[in-house]
Image (tube, one colour):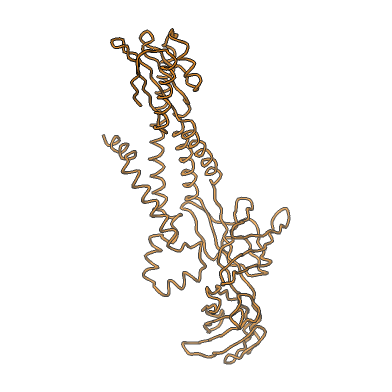
Length: 450
């Protein structure tokens, strides 16, 4: 009894519709809520600083990593079970109908009526599959494969969803900010942001990536037009130079590298202490959204008590995002007190208490997303199978026509069934009726039932 209730629940229209709606809601959440692999770490740090309670709720509910969350995986598994059981029922139904169709063909006797009838249906590619009661009932069929169109489509869809489960369970992704001239060793410890499936292990790309150059161009209004990273891939058996853009990712072995829309400027400093010790550090600042606004950042300086608050303009005139005339407005605080506040340009040095700070230079950084997606080949195969199933359903719909004779009235009738294009099928039956009547095969008029 319980098992029967579960089966009815899985194929209930209410269940299917509810699962579809919940999935759509999850996709909307994934679109509206910033995902950890789509934004730079500084974005989430700023969010956490501004509204820690909202950030905690989003983080605990895994709304910032929807597609690798436990609840989304559970939803997809339930969809898979429902679709799988529905597919089993469709296969059983089609097999049963196929057996009945074969049995009907074996039992029917040769048609002894007018050849004109056979020619009319043969011209329309119908096959005679049954003759009963001394030629009083004829059954013609067309496109038998069309009965399997829905099964093929749902089989492809099931394969896509199973592949999606594999992705949800074992997908590994990592976001890294590479500054020009920097080398990423491909190991998990180097990722600024990591997102792994429920059962995924450690993510090591297996190769090194060197950022040679970042190219970025803009429309007249200041909106981003083109973004491209020139990278050097270092692996066995050698070195490969490639370019990665937003619409042109790079595929290396089992890892895909995507160009994100996150990029900005790397500010490099050397802090020289009185004893001669030097500390080198780099600050990555996100590009400002407005060309006239400075790029901002705040961070502590390693191995020192200083907190840096930075406002950086790549072009002091405010007319370009390029590093034409860079200038930095820097505020340095220690223990809550400001110890330096002023402007500084690359190549200059300023004194901060007993230390000397050198602003050594500026370069671009690029945000690259590394993704390992097992099971994607299955998704592509499932997509192809699904498209084939749709083609079968709509291009080769199954049709069945029954031609009958009422011996008491001498009235012939025609009836049929199809799952697609009912109005067109009705017209086809009317044309067949007209051909039979005008051909003088039957003297009485037809009754037509579609």
